[in-house]
Length: 209
Image (cartoon, rainbow, N blue to C red; front, side, top):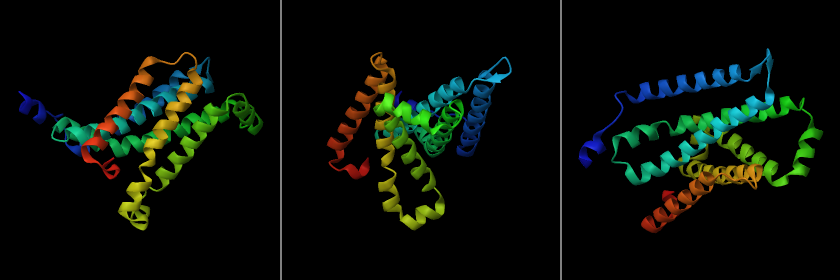
């Protein structure tokens, strides 16, 4: 029974899975854009929130597909999920960029508006801003020629910052929702910490993270 589960996979090639994933993301992009229209006016705030939600879910997928692959790489379905990790990570940047773009569009690109928000809730906006800057750096360094320039080892070390992005985003979300924090977000973070603690205990070295 376990062997059958291990061999189970979607009836698509790797390329087909990637194409389907891209099509789904394009559909999501336009669906949010259309849903954000109200009386022929684009609701910037609604679009900002929805694009952020997609970025957040994609980030969860990126982190946990990697974790699952490290523990259950013998499962074919996990291998297929891991194939999308790179593309999901790139999509995180794009949707996070849309989130930030509509935030500034909502404020007419006012720096004073942004500074007043930072003053009102520094943890919320500073954590979000740092997370986006890291996302931008990781996105730029994902180019093939830069991977070669940085060398594979240095590139892998740099891209471990994805975990810092995840932690900063958790802080960002908790700061926004405080004191009404959703229980599953805390549970997700606890699972993340325990899972990596287990990997560290198993391997005795952080390089496998």
